Image: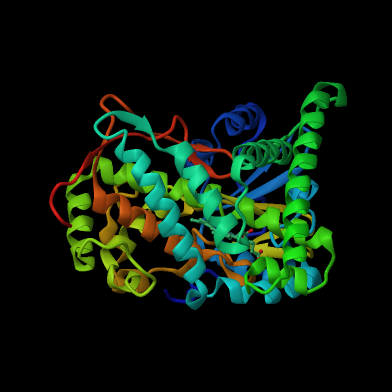
Length: 456
Ligand code: HEM
């Protein structure tokens, strides 16, 4: 992909008028609608008000929504030093402490350098091994459900949870796995509700939820502490991420924060991208056939790390799935100092919200944006496009550290499923995205899997 073009310039004189956006009753209507359905609300607001929109809360606190790739490039890359994670991400720190997703500046950069080698494209052997083993086990289970409709989402959540645990940390929680996955999901649901809340609620209203959150955190902390103590007792010479964190001698709290951060960042996102891929393949049989034909190169064996580059069409399919259904559907930054965007002044302290879901449908860059069309991602087409018209993994210094791991998981799981089954959507089912912390299928993805008789 190319670097951002400079077509969008920070004008210092051009337009100093206020940023367009809803006022009065329209603002109230949109605030309510944002709570129910931020995807459609931001998409509709982009169509109505344009690439930069000012919203404000009842208290008067404003935030600015941006949709143009140049503006996204500005805060992620060109002027990233002026943009911190901001106060909206603070509730996450209640859960993830000072992990890589929540920390900033020196703490963040030291940890990022420490952990980066484990995520390099040429370091994915453990993840591939874990993915192949876990997927093969799952597909045996799915074979027992062949020809009947069932929702694949919960199994995929558990699959990706096991892969992060075993691929990065060499951990197997056994019977503790389901409760830990539930506690993780509950804790994240709590902090994401806190982060998106626009009106502070009286403490008495949230008391039960806060007590449950505290209990979930205590339970997860106990799981992590036991696993770390066990590894220390066994000696830490496997060379995985857990060993690196223990050996760096940063203290048990740091190991805990990074472990939970990776479990959060690397689990729901990948599960959701696999689910949406299987959904779109099930509703586009011609594309599913093309993927199956490409997999014939493997002669029936699951893909290994060296095979993945030989599956360009499969990659085009993923990229297009993550354009339409970006698992990280939006994010936030906060201006540290005064700045300008699109000719509008941005005072220090302004929260800036961006959304992959909206920019990935920007009509200037994506004709027939709602159509599933993997051909948009040929190498030439991708190179010709603005770098930030498509950013499912973010960009700049905070670019997703797990991008290569995610692509390896995604390719391996989807290839193994398509090698073994023909997928169709359960009769009468409709699949819609829902914006929680990640973008997820609102009511699951019910599929019917038919075992393939022919060799791929
Ligand atoms: C399809 C799967 C994934 C998607 C779409 C995704 C997306 C993203 C995005 C958009 C960011 C940037 C956030 C920002 O700018 O504020 C990010 C950061 C991050 N991701 Fe991922 N991610 C995925 C998989 C993973 C995996 C598998 C892991 C690790 C196991 C992971 C770990 C992280 C971490 C630790 C960060 C913070 C990086 C930093 O700030 O230095 N992600 N991810």
